Amino acid sequence: MAATARQKQRFQNTLLCLLEGIVGEVTLIELRNESSVWGQIESVDDQMNVSVKNAVFTGVNGIHTKFTAFYVKGRMIRFVHIPESVDIMKTINSQLNVHKRVRDGPGKNEIDKETRKADQKITKKRQMIKLQERIIAQRLAEMKKASTS
Image (cartoon, rainbow, N blue to C red; front, side, top):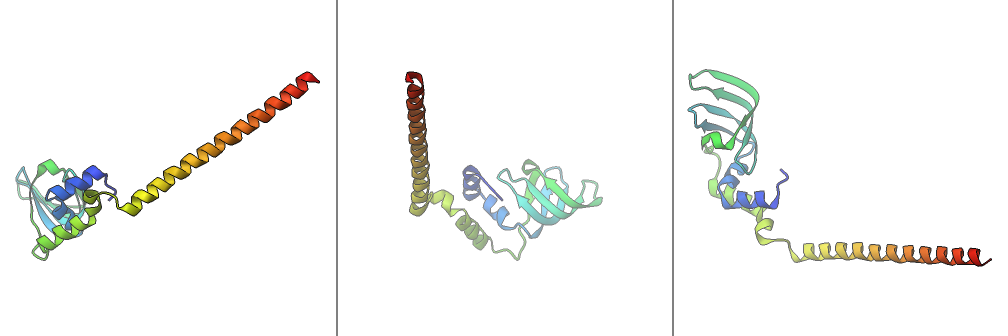
């Protein structure tokens, strides 16, 4: 998942990191309208929208419908059952470690690398400007010679 810094921060400061940590697990999601979805969690975004594959949707009337892919809007979720095989604290900590860089900010080496890149861009621009100035000066000199001859 390619997330922005704001999305990563939201994962860290809510239990979304737990939901992200159970991607790949088979679980039950209960919806606000009394229906439910059972299947393997494929992805979770920062709005708690969940993609489920190999899903079985159970409607309010109790009828089961199979889907290869099912999308649940985060605002429709009432409960997500965490599988017993998942160690909740270990999962949260591992997800926080994945996103730790957002909370701590970039490291010194990353700042140095970005500074070097910016310096290189500035140097290249200055070199191009100097080259353009030389070319213009040469052309002006050539034009003066041609007009005096």
